[in-house]
Length: 381
Image (cartoon, rainbow, N blue to C red; front, side, top):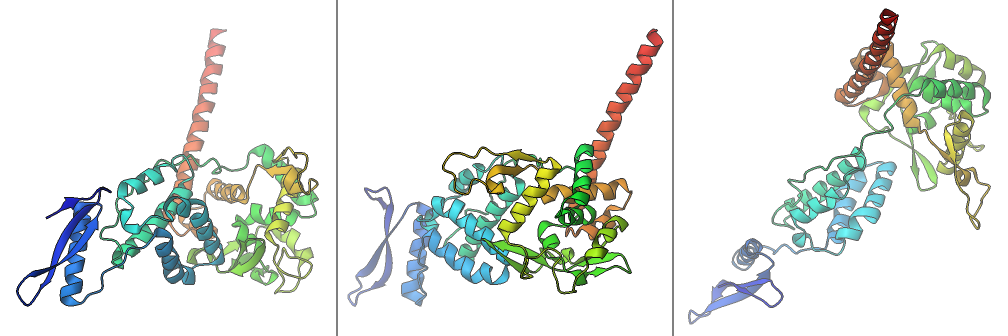
């Protein structure tokens, strides 16, 4: 017989055996819902009749830590470890940390995920992906009786404002900066090769084959806190050969160094740290006219630091998208473009090409409207 306690939980009993005189031996259990109560009863019967261990409920932070340590950390890069640390500390633990795994409901997870509506698609996918991985693992381990993340629906993401090529004006200023700024080579590598930031920072002189006019992209530089470390590439597709245009080759040849030297390195030969990279990028963007001045408030520590004074309005991703745009405008097949830029999924490249094709059609429509207006004006005269 099931009863409701003062706390609102359901309480029931399970027959786990009989005394010598035939009197039943009961074990009393409780749970928040009738379904969970029946699951607990079944677990108790399994334990006392067949000797199977009763799965213990755990708080979210306990199971998440165990899942990460055993099933995720050994198989991911330093950059990914940094992401998970931020994800747990900033997002998941403040909301679910002290809750018991079995108490977290599908509705609660959906409400939490809905709170990310309007953020980037990648952030939404990362949050949902992490939750699904944790709860599906807990279900497989018998910690929970059902997976509350199984039917999560993704909320609507914001439009990707960073997916655009450089404007004509920006291109002129970027090319001028490439040739006049002492650190312009980094900008040239992004502009002419379309690399990810970490791939550009990981380039070594030995990666270049100036006879074949190509460069082998085979490593990445990840930032973990303030330190930089050489790591494997983002995906298998990222290991690729990229053509080196004549303009970039002319800039590279006079600067050639030993094969094992990084193109962009500290005085001791190490890859650039995150702070050094950010300051370099701020200086480059400032000369390009692609930066905003920050308000430095009184009492700010190190007020003369360029990172406190300047906020770049472009990121390396803009140059990568600009590169794909140039491939499209050159008539290069999207399958070939996919290989050059190191996309794992053809659809990623195809989506960019489709986006660019739509932009071209919109521009053509505007140009035709101008032609018709001019013709109408001429006939009226």
